[in-house]
Image 1: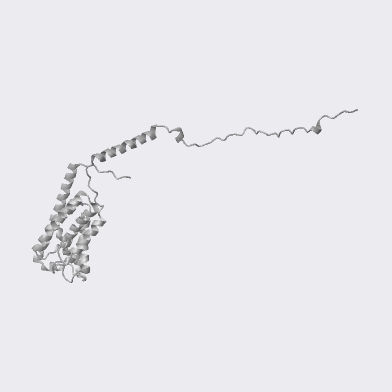
Image 2: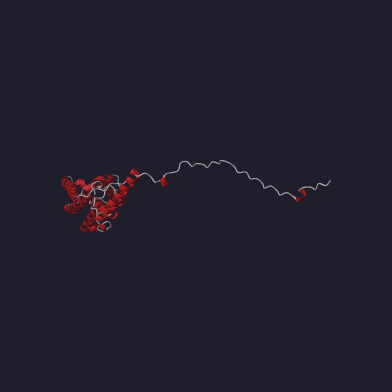
Length: 270
């Protein structure tokens, strides 16, 4: 069964995009506000900053869940907040069905990757999640190649293209392990859920409409012929073939042999 082509309505499509972008922006700002509240709370309870990912330790496993909420200072929080708002809005607006799964995989995946291969330090911050969003947008554009995906990836590359290099070791105070884990999570999420959000409807060109109309007309003619026109005699299958009956048999008579001279009339002498 063929999938019906969605009807293109530019006004309805624009309203849908605006609504999804507004919802994604609100969710991103709400998450950044939560990060700000947690950072304020860390002034009253400085021990909160110890709940990061500490590789190869049992207590460090808790940091897989709590590390993205903790930041070292306001500068650290501000740099991640910009990426979360912009990239989170792009991801939620273009991929509303898979955005939540991508965020969850990036949250967990970056922490697990850091716990497995990270340096013996306390890794905190939402930078791994930011890298998940960026690399997911980039990979989804390569895999899907529809117009909204390409536009979102272009905006992400133009504003945060430097993230392609921050997955490598650079500064000692920067957790490249979180960045690399988030990048791998984003690539995996893009591959797994690349088909979860259907492609948006697009306008049909004139030649596409003409071809569709011609195909519909041909199908209608074939249906009418099959329904109303009786089949031709040569198209009717033969169910029984009559045998030719043999009414008699011609007997062949051999020709009579000619009479020999000795068998002619005899002389009658007295």
